Length: 286
Ligand code: ZN
Image (cartoon, rainbow, N blue to C red; front, side, top):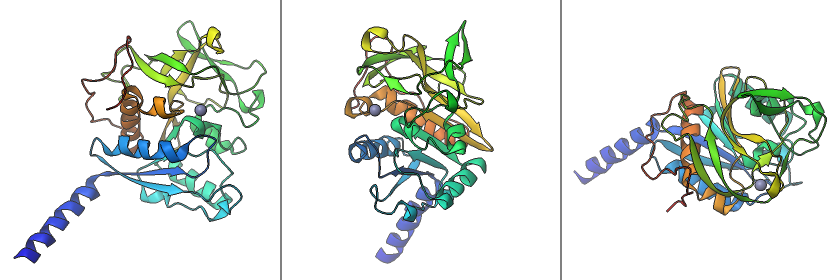
């Protein structure tokens, strides 16, 4: 009897696990504290109970990146916390095939610094920064008269001023990721990336923020959460999430949870929590 109960219980558990959206976080190299942020990203994603999350950690820099061959196709969505050495040709090809074939991809913060030399990756993220990015990488996206327009002015791709708390402006209130979120909401202290450049093909800006000049910023409204189609795949470029303050933030967590579900399924069934911040005050995650 006991054996039978245990057997059916474990069956029930595995059925539930099988219903969950399979997420793979990739990390292992980053100029940021990925060993601190990956567990927070994992916890954020496990919280709603709809995702099962695995982590694939690459070898350290110079220790054989060729052996890094995650099985992307086993997952509905890949979340990147990776900014490091180029992956092998085989891994790049597998990733392109995975996303273009309908896989989801969420790029978090410095993941958009990665792979300046990889054209398909830059198409996926739409815009990127650092790594020698310049006008050769593509235009800046600038908000002019309410429209995101290409600015081909020569200059570097990627910069940020001093870290600070800032308001995110909801630029696509009808998009499933943004639906039900306020017109503006506060995000905890973070690096506000500015002047990213890239192919910027079919980018829909979901959230942006003013990068103030007096904090060393661009004086422009900067796109910070974007969606980009890549073949049959859905990509979310989330430029937020530099460090501890930024990831322990309700605005960051909820937008990441919604972005990951959307990248995987094209829909968002999660409800916006009552604790979601307004445009006055950011909220630390419990
Ligand atoms: Zn950073």
